[in-house]
Image (cartoon, rainbow over all chains, first blue to last red; front, side, top):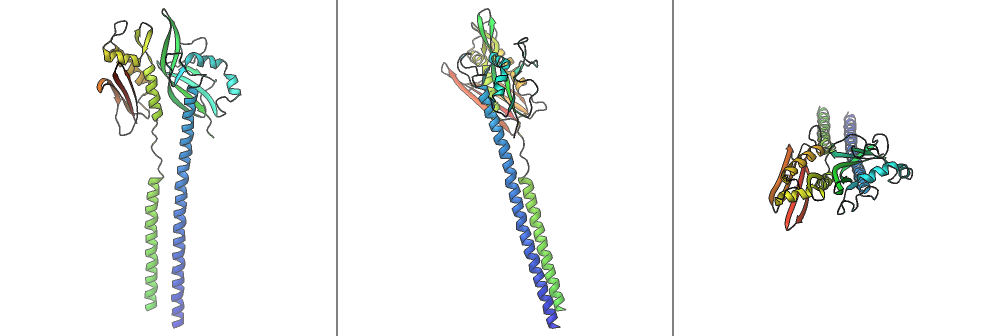
Amino acid sequence: MQTMVNNIKAQMKIQQMAIMLLAVTLFFVLIGIFAVTFKLSGLKETSVGLAEENAQLLVTKIANSPEFSCGSSFGTQKLDCVDEDKALSLKQSISRYIQSDFWGSDVSNIEIRKVYPENSKECDLGNYPDCGVIRLLSGDLTGTAVGNFVLLCRKEASDNGAIDKCEVAKIFVSYNQQ
Amino acid sequence: MRSIGKNKRAQEEMVGFGFIMIIVFVIILIFLGFALRKPAISGVESYEVKSFLGAYLGASTSCEDNFGPISLKDVIYRCENGQSCIDGSNPCDVLEDSSSNILKASWPIVDRPQKGYILNITADNKEVFSIEEGNQTANYKAGSNRFSRSGTELIISFKVYY
């Protein structure tokens, strides 16, 4: 009788130990899963943030590239200044740039849109400069688009000769996020 | 009888341990719920604010000099100096109209991430011009530009609230 009781006690103790070990193991496994999930969620946000930073650098690079930038044509050298006349000329010969992935294979379209005065007409040789959107490629912006403000300048004829006319615009670069 | 009592105690200890585990898991879940929440999307970037200021200052206005339309930067100087435009118009009125139109078009506050903005122009710490719109929330992105001409230091600061 005493042996039976001792056996039962021993079994109880073994069961308690087993359950406790199981619980502690589960506890640490769950902690580990939560910690890994927490770390990995931060990684995704970091990669998206880096992609956006790269896109923003791309916008700045394109706006200040010789194909678009004002240079010193409109007084002193200006940063983030786009020559509207150059941009429209570029639209006419854009196929060479696209075929050679000049701005990178991820860039799908570049659009310059006048903010003020607003005008939704797409520019072509027939309506320039009475228009507000210069889209280098046909079709809408696809993928992810990042924009930034630029100064859009052109030369206009007047009684006193050529004058500078500058307006606030936004340049949008759409790219395919990988 | 004693062994039954001891068994009951052992069961009570296991149940107690189980309760502690459950409480700890719940606390961890609450903590992780806060930690894994997506951060608020601002929709306004500081590089946009800085670039906007550059574009704003270079924009042509209806105020002209002998060579044609002058930029907002030059209009600010004329407003501060009290020097009128070639057609006699007040540069401060041109500054107000142009700034209001450009800001309304560039930073609409209806159905947008930005909820308000404020633009301040000071000359040697005295206010030349100020314009604000919308609500000033606790979050904002800001940029400023400073330059001097004829010994006067002009500071243009711009804040967008979101």
